[in-house]
Image 1 (cartoon, one colour):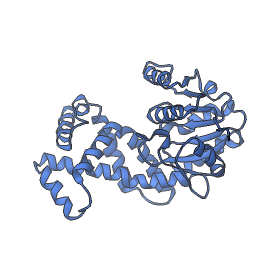
Image 2 (cartoon, one colour; image 1 turned 45 degrees about the horizontal axis):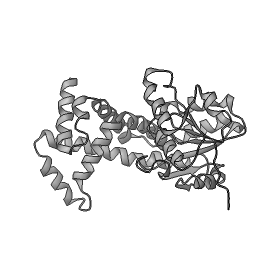
Image 3 (cartoon, helix red, strand yellow; image 1 turned 180 degrees about the vertical axis):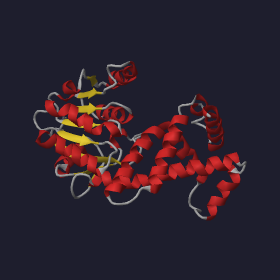
Image 4 (cartoon, helix red, strand yellow; image 1 turned 45 degrees about the vertical axis):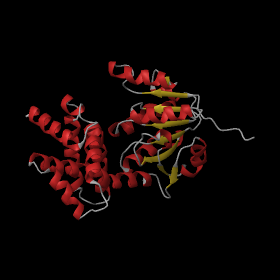
Length: 300
């Protein structure tokens, strides 16, 4: 009988993505998982530490503590913090662990992070290409870079679902960032279109008219889903779209639509914190749109 590989895994960043992946890995039989989040020492980190305890993950006392004697590091921080996360662990790495960078950042940022770590870790460019729930650690991934082929069998043993993208570090990130132009851009257009329709008293009429051009799409469901996603995660999506903007600039393309999406996502992320909006997130688009309009009026 072949002995299953059970590596020691460390998370840098223990928000929604880190928690989801860690909980799935623990249920899959991985026993040694540690995590560090810069919020751990603060009051805001109590929920994160409680989640670690709930999932059987050791809450580390520092970045150095989290990566001590580890086989694999999964970096799951905010987009703006991805390089700093690597910088925080670089002096403490031993044994050349894999470093899976799952952050939603531009190809250039991934390449900079790989250079920063150098030969202290085997850097892998990872792109998460579907919502992290409900599949958690089995959410589809793209991986790229010089160590992608080597880590793929290990990740397969961990029941992770992945596709190796040929080419250099940054290729997986490029796919994620470019597809986000469409995914997050459609969310922003959905909100803008349906919010206007709601305020005009024409929500059902506009929804029905869209069938003429897109007969295969159920715009009622599209709107329900996209508006809730923006209200729940708009600020994070705005940060990701800033990375998409940077990606397009790296490719020599002016990101006119992307920059507008950043503004709409960020605005919706702020409105999504309003109690009137949060109370409606399990409702349909009409109820959510009314709450968004009311919250926007309160802000002004």
